[in-house]
Length: 124
Image (tube, rainbow, N blue to C red; front, side):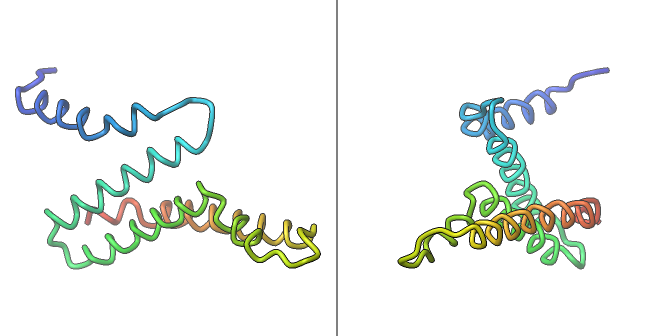
């Protein structure tokens, strides 16, 4: 396998582009796996926006950005935080907690089902 100068340059640019994500990466938490996936999806949306001219390019970008939004919500426990913001004078209840967990799990399922259903079609 030959390594061309172009491939070396692209590789160095990728190292530079990923430097902030890789520097923050830790193996001890799922949060960082989501961060890597989110960053990759943002790069792909930018690439499609810049270079793709297929008929459904904007649909692909919108689907990718929806996934990025879902990753943000899952990473930051959005639905649990939302439930905590809505606490009344009686405080946190098991029902509120269960509902927040269900919504958080539904966001994860929607994220991965969207990826599964669409990821390969984003390039055609």
